[in-house]
Amino acid sequence: MIKHESIETNVGLLIILTLIVVSIGGLVEIVPLFYIDDTIEEVEGIRPYTALELRGRDIYQREGCYLCHSQMIRPFRDELLRYGHYSLAAESQYDHPFQWGSKRTGPDLARVGGKYSNEWHVAHLNNPRDVVPQSIMPNYPWLLATDLDYSDVQDRMRALKVTGVPYSETQAEYDANVTEFGADVADQLDILRAEEHLMQQALAGNYDGQRSRITEMDALVAYLQVLGTMVDFSKYDEGYFAEFR
Amino acid sequence: MNQTKGKTGGAVQTTGHAWDGDIQEFNNPLPSWWLWSFYATVVFAVVYWIFFPAWPVANSYTKGVMNNITFVDSEGHKKTMHWNTRALLIKELQEGKTAVLSREYMDKVAAAGYSEILGDPEMMAFTRSVAKGLFGDNCAPCHGTGGAGVIGLFPNLADDSWLWGGSVKNIETTISDGRLGFMPAFGDVLSEAQIADTASYVLSLSGQTVDAAASARGKAVFQTNVGGCHYCHTPAGTGLKSQGAANLTDQIWSIIDVNGAADPAAKKALVEQVIAKGVERRMPSWSKRLTPTQIKLLTVYVHELGGGQ
Image (tube, rainbow over all chains, first blue to last red; front, side, top):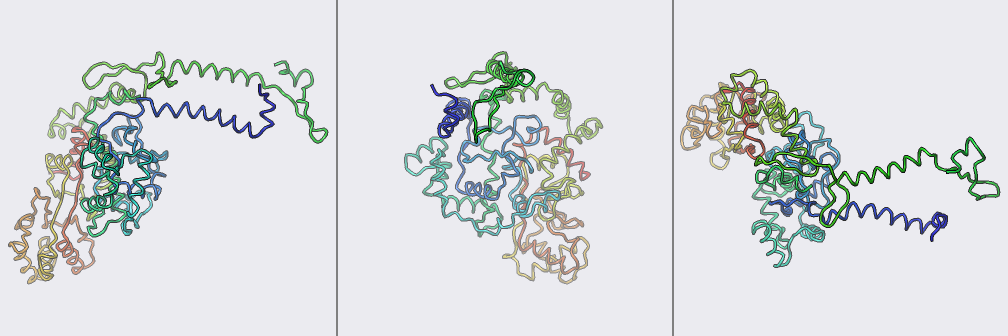
C-alpha cells in the first residue's frame, strides 16, 4: 500500500500517477468517439480536397484565416438562417487539422462555397474595402502576385495519407477510390498525377482571372469555393442527421 | 473532522514536520462547507450520468433517462429520440414562437403572386423586414448594403437601369439561376483606329461630345458585321436584355466610370479599354442556397430597390 506521504515526497511517482489520472479523463472522453457509430454521419458526396484545393487550404492556414473565421455552423435557428445547414462532422473528416475555429471576427465560412463569384473573392481578398466598405479584414494583395508553389504538393498529400485521407499511390488504392468516389474524383486523388491535375483545375477554373498564371489566389479561391458544397442536403430527411446524436 | 473547530476551540495540530529547526506546518482540516460541497458534486455527477448522455457502451452510449424530444419529420411522422440540439433545432423551427409567427407570413407570401404581394401593404412590410436581412447576408457583399454595386464588378441595383430586365420575372430568374454577362474582347478583331472610332460612337449615343467624323466611322463598325456590336446592343444601342447587353444610350455606366472621368479623352480611353478587352461578369445561382420563398422575397426587395419595371 502506497502511503500518501510517499507519493507527495517522490516527484517522479507523483508525475506518473498524475499522468495516469489525467489520461483516464482524456481516454474516456476521446477514445469512444473513434468507435461510436454515431460520431461521423453517413452522408454522400464528401471527398478529400483536390491538389489545388489542398494548396488553397494550406494558404488559408498560412495567412491565419482561421483566427477570424470559423468553419462551424452550429445547430441554432439564427445560424441556420444566416449561414445555412449546420456543419456535419462528416464534412471535416478529411481536414487535418480541422478549421472549425473558435472566434468569429469575420463571418463563418463553412458554407461560403458557391455563395460569391470568383471575381468577388479576388476583389475581396485583394482589398476587402473595394467591395465591402465597412470591412475590417486586412488586404492580401500578394496572393494575386505570387505564383503558386506546388512542387511539394505530392509530399503534402502523402503526409495527409498517413493520417487516413484516402489519396492514392498504388493501383489498388486508386481502384478503391474509383469505387468509393467515382473515376473523376479518384483521378484528382491520385498523388502521382497531382501536379498535372492541379494545373488542369487551375487553368480550367481560372479562379484568379489571369489565364496565363497559376497564383496563390487560384488555390485559395478554389478552396473557398468548395467549402460546404459537397453534401446535397435536399436528399436527406429533416430528422436524419439528428439520428447521429 | 475532529479538528473542524480548531480555530475556535482547542489548539490546531501541526503535521509534525519541522524545517530549519523551528518552521512548522499547521494541519488545518478542510472546512466542512467545502467538504460537503465536494460530496454534493460527486452526487450530482452520478445523477447526471443517469439523466444525460454519458457513458460509452460498445458502439453507442447511454442516452440518459426521461430525456426525450419529439418532432415531426418530413413525412409527417412523429419521431421521438433522446434530447439533442439537432432535434431541438427541428422542433424549434416547427413550434418555436418566432418560427411559427414568421411561417404564417412565409406561407402567405409563398402562396401569393407578385402583383398580390406588391399590392398588399402588410405583406410588403413583412417582405421588407425579412428580405433586408436576406439581402444583407447574401447580396450585399457584392451589390453593397444599399444595392449601389461596384462599378466594373457588380451592377447597381438601386438605379433604374436593368441589364437583364427589371420585371419581377426577370429578377427572379437572375437570382435563382445566376447570370453570365459576357462581351467578347475585340482587341484582336478590330484595329486600334476602329476601336477608337467605335468608342467615339458609343460615347455619342449617350450625348457625350465627340469628334463627328470619328463617330460616323464608328457607327459603321457598330452597325455592321465589322464589329457586330449591334447584335447584342441593338442597332440603336439600347441593348438586349436577354443577353445582358447594356443600354448605351443612357448615362449609366456599370463597367467603367465614364461619368467620373476627367475629360473626353479619358472617357474615350475607358470605352476603348472595354471594347478591346471585353467583359466577363458572373452572378452565382441561388436556387440551391435559398428556398423559392426566400428568392421571391428578395425579388420583390430588389424590384423595389430600383423602382423595377
